[in-house]
Image (cartoon, rainbow over all chains, first blue to last red; front, side, top):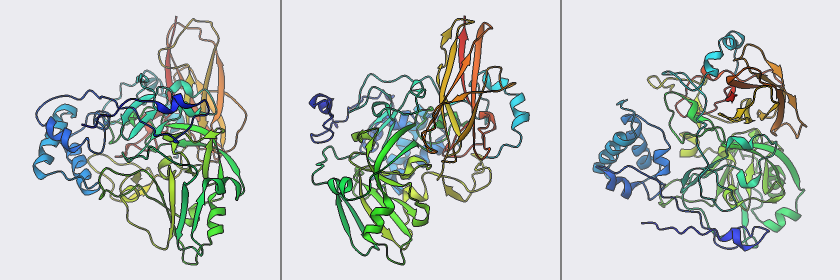
Length: 103
Length: 398
């Protein structure tokens, strides 16, 4: 999903940097994210709003932290994540990007 | 931040100078090992890249030898993933509405011709800059020291725009909104609210950065510039200014960018402080741009340490350098003063005589006498905001 093409259109237009007179394309980066149980739910629920970079650059965190992050996405950002997926994504995030602590 | 115990603490500073082996609960140095990516974003040279959507780019440390951060290496931080990819400068309008006598729809041309044009050189720093120094790991992107930069901004005073619109008597709050949007319609938009009495004449609506149009990723065509304040309210692609008489409850105002509302602005993970306050103005800070960690130099050669220092607009009085783990401090030379909100570049001649690893520490002191604490003396907060520890780089003398 979300195939974005790496085109640095605006760098090639003119020396004056034509700014956004032409459509700007922000490069797509394929972040190396760990595969494992629950990844499909992460792929379906998280990538809609943000890159995997947001996940892997949070640093290792507790299960409680990841749970609260997922809940924040629902409560504050209104992401339509099902109850089931809250648990699946939390477990995935803690398993691969956790610090071993529950709290 | 007051640090009464500073002298005592600096005697024991050799521990921190040895590096980032922070034990549980002790703040260390921010992560400094990240390399720039191979991907250049529009109008940017390759930077440290945390995310492409929304774009999050960090300026590498070696940029901070200069008082002005060039546009192509200036850090980038957006909150929303849907950023317009096309802006027509001929039809772009900034709308001013709400409790005003006359609604305005200001074009870029009007902004540049129908108002007094002003310039301010000011630091722009993310409240979470250097977050990776906190231990345990604080929530949020683990920035190193480069979520900051300093530019010369040109634009129009916000107060001149508001005066043109005419504020109604009961006006108290001003909400600022940009064109970036969430993926879901229901997601609250990134509106920032400020009290009218917080906004002085230094606040401008800027269209130019270092003599060029604002780069797209830094908010083209206009953004808010609030000198002395962390960047969370410097709204990019500013499109709407709404004056109200009551505070609107918003996620980015009520939950994000807040710190414990106590004297130390601190808490523990187990015992979070219940009441919070916005991060608002910046504390005194400095970053060494040269040398960088792991730079190798010959002994008895001539090293010029360079860096930048800043605060919230009181101005930098001194930057002092230690090369002996904080036992003794010597004054660096401060370069030209580009205004109280700007980076103050400093330099310090250093001739390493001993072999092996040497740590160079920089501490800035502002005109109020506030100075940077040792990293280890900085207490934790859940969002990892406002880190301003004494900067340390460790070089190798051969």
